[in-house]
Length: 169
Image 1 (cartoon, rainbow, N blue to C red):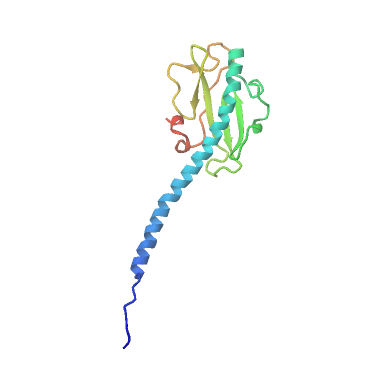
Image 2 (image 1 turned 30 degrees about the vertical axis):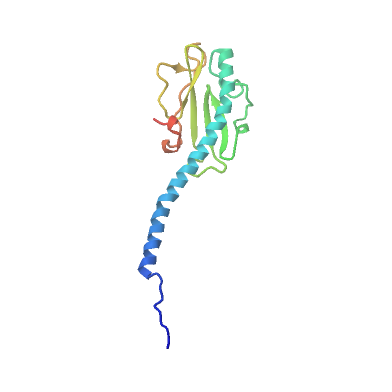
């Protein structure tokens, strides 16, 4: 006597449903991961700019005005001296820090910039305006009180969706 058992397995329909579900999940996950990696790259630039804040604040406290460029801020003249894996340069223009992305940065932000604009407080402190965030209430750009060289806000070119929440409108 031959024992015939029915073979158990998945039908073609069941397999197609599983493949469709995996496709839908991938369609959602890949763009979210891309956004995440671009935000991480933007963060590298902001961390590099943080290192340049101190020389700018020192120059302001010594001279009462915004430094014209990196040299006046006590840094090297070459903006490419401050570079990283995703950042090609950190420039200073009238006290405003401008971070430019390139090298291994995602093509979406390659060649674009994020800016940090300094504003002075009554007690000669500095508050930084990041990206397209609103200007600090009641404060003037760095150098306004001294009547010398004054920082002028420059809008970032990196899309807001890739900036940290503190750098957006």
